[in-house]
Length: 315
Image 1 (cartoon, one colour):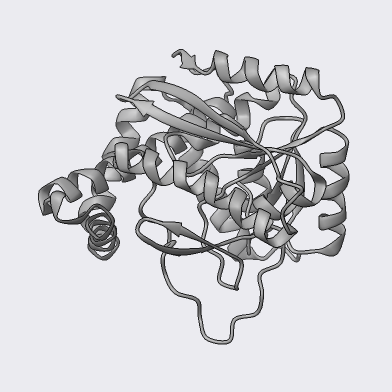
Image 2 (image 1 turned 60 degrees about the vertical axis):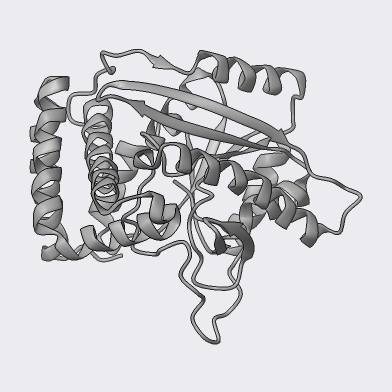
């Protein structure tokens, strides 16, 4: 893709902002991020109101407008904290987070699976909860071969920089949407690698329909389809933030394919198992989830939409 002057200007602005955050000490970086989030929360009235509407539509009358506003604020602040932490770890001055992350049990389980079933990969599903980016950065650093799928940004300079920030060294990045990528996914899973994906993203085209938030969500089909096709399990990783600086990672599964069922039916069953847990976890602590995604997960399909490709959205 040709690099334009606009692309260079956007890249320099992004690098300037990220450089400032990356050079701050950890807690001042979070404080700076919280301040920016507060400004965005106040000035971004339309996005704030939509997030509050979504929250109340899911949680019902038991959630007052005041409670929904507090949840919306915590969700946005959490996203700002996530960005600050990723810049702290992978920015211009890479550092380790000066806090403990409660994920040892999860890492031990993942290592045990890889050791006991060599050559058999798995799906590593991580929804938009807590600092979900940390899961994709920490797990590969512990000796787990991981790969993921990436979209294409309009600005190639920004895309390259963000990919370097968000993914640990050694994580293979595959572009979404091609038959070559699909073949590579199957090959990697059969070699024992883990595919990291985000299960809670709505697809614009017909995909896998599951019950979620009391309605029906049309999701990318890859999670269940890949697990069934290659006969590998799904692990669900739930990241949670505790206060400003605490983190934990909970692992659910493995959810194994059922070879006695038809493939399409089993792909839906696997997807539903995962999303039932995601639904319950969000309802338990709704401020952990990101309510501001442009594509609301319960939005209906556009008329005459084509089927979604099986290359799902990655982190």
